Length: 143
Image 1 (cartoon, rainbow, N blue to C red):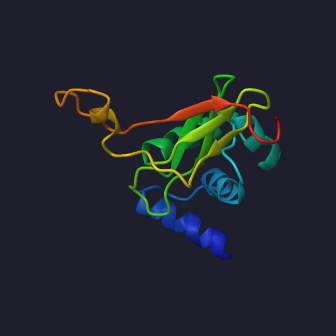
Image 2: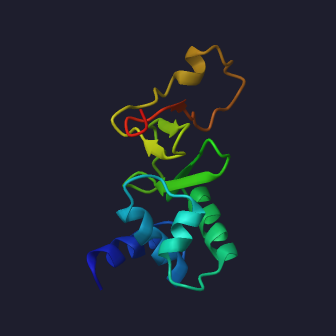
Image 3: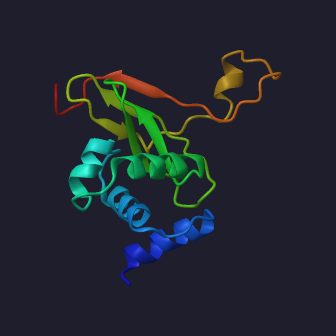
């Protein structure tokens, strides 16, 4: 077993999920990705004949278990990236969506403050699960 397979097994086991070929392949793809990927991007890199519905279900499960996080691109489709290196940690970085090329980037060098919602005047009666910040504009490659 190679180190990447070892880490996907650890992610799955810690999340309480059993290992399947699609789950392992999706985790491996996201681990190698330089940016969040959409399902069409993934399907082009997964073995021929991979069931589309299974990929969507896998991503929904991974999102729910916080193995991955997702962000909506300008075209309203979801892009997915691996979550924090430690399972159960919320990702706390903003994302950038390019209005020209539709690429979505994790801005890992920045951090969303835990107090963002409160600083915006959201009352304590609301139980905030997490804050999401998405910046839209034109990336350096498209300028």
